[in-house]
Image 1 (cartoon, rainbow, N blue to C red):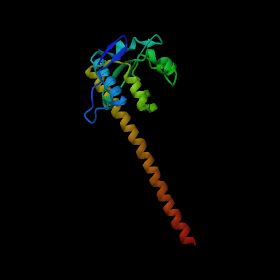
Image 2: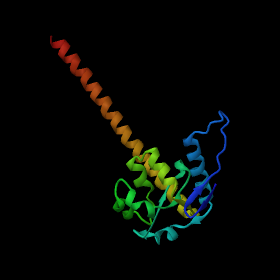
Image 3: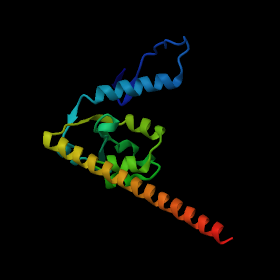
Image 4: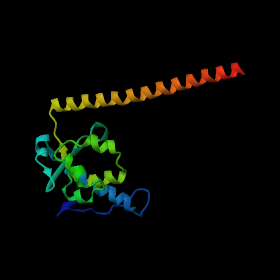
Length: 171
C-alpha cells in the first residue's frame, strides 16, 4: 500500500482460506498497512498542540491498552463527525483518548479514525510515567465503583433475606 494525494492504493492479495477476497479483509489490510506506515512518524504533545483549529485539527488518541497513543489529523472529518465538529474542536491539539473511550465508539468509528492517523505520540520517560499513573488511578477508581455496587447488592440481598425471615415467622 502507498498513499498519493490522500488516496490509499493497495494491491489485492489472495487470502489463505479462499481465492475470493472479501471486501472487509481488503479494507482492513489497506487501513492497517497505511496506519502502520504513518505511525512511523513521531510527534510530541507540543507539536500536536499547534493543531487546534477548524482549519487544522489534530487529536491524540490511544493508550497502552489500545496499542499506544497515536496522532490523528481529523481536519477533513470535522464536518462529517456525527457528534458535530465542536466536540472534536474542544479537544483539538490535545489528548482526547479519555473522551474517545468514554463515549464508547463503535468499530466503524475506530475504522474511520484509523484513516486519519499521521503518526505516534513521542513521550519522554516522565510523560510515560505520568500516563501510567493516571491509568492506574483511573483503573483503581473504576474498580472501586464496582466494589461499591457489589457491596450494595449484597446488602440488599441480606436485607431481603432478613425481611423474608421476619415475614415467615410472623405468619
